[in-house]
Length: 389
Image (cartoon, rainbow, N blue to C red; front, side, top):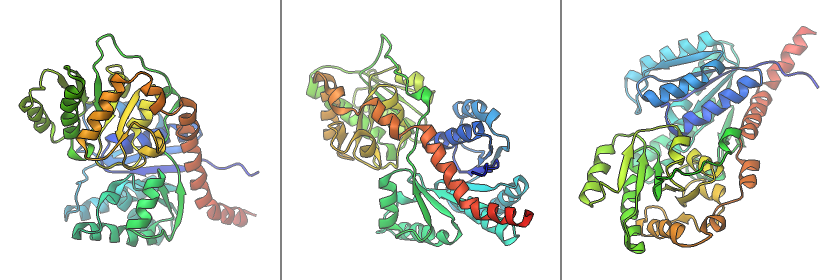
């Protein structure tokens, strides 16, 4: 078997926060350890001290460096200048693989990669949605526009990567049956994430970790917490960990309901620190793809209570009693109360750690992604060998 040459891999995405950032960090580390050169191109205007520390962790694995430049969340005329600057940056890095993540990252990677091809420079162009544009509805004019743009971009895409069955099915339903190469490659977590994290002596009853925006359901968490107190007939405690544009609104919501002293709020931190604060992790999202927080919670031995959205049922088990109806604070409150009042609820509701590890590990994810890169570039490698002989 011919030895595979090292690849130059550039990941493009907008916001260095949340699941996409975690996904890219894991791929960068795993592929760097395998002997490949990796780089990241992302927005310079989002993220804070927590994200800066995460970048510092992976800098030794970024042989192609970290490139940050302003990227707006929504499309605007300023994107024209940004696209040109992005193209020049990418061209100077001479990647073999351009992997776009999220809607904006997908546009940048595929347009820049296609422009390079016009200039006779071959590069593999990949796109992973991570939910993103697939959260839009075909019933709205904006949704129709976004989803049609996804369809159009297939002509500039060598492969689509889906991180769960839900995402693959949502793409087919909303965009159409893919007309390019596709792979289902689950998100995965590293060996260090499969270590049980015991709770502290001052642990609270419930923990929320995530962005403070309505899509992730912090408001549902607050409502369900109050209802769980009424179900159990006693005061409870909780911590919300994260940052986001609606933080003050959720704080006001807690104060109005008289919960300000029983639910505390802390800024984003390393997930291992957060997990030590509670045994019960609540994920009340209104929409998801395959959230890392669920996988990390399972790896750490936590009890997960989550909405039945996205790929979460694929991780917890489709019949798990830990799954609740989305946007339903009554159902969420019931499960939150059950997790405390029913002996053995954790074992009945959570999948076995070895089962999770066999499917959702970073090594499996990185190997499958790398195999896809190599398959896409194989025709070029064969041509190069033929020319050399």
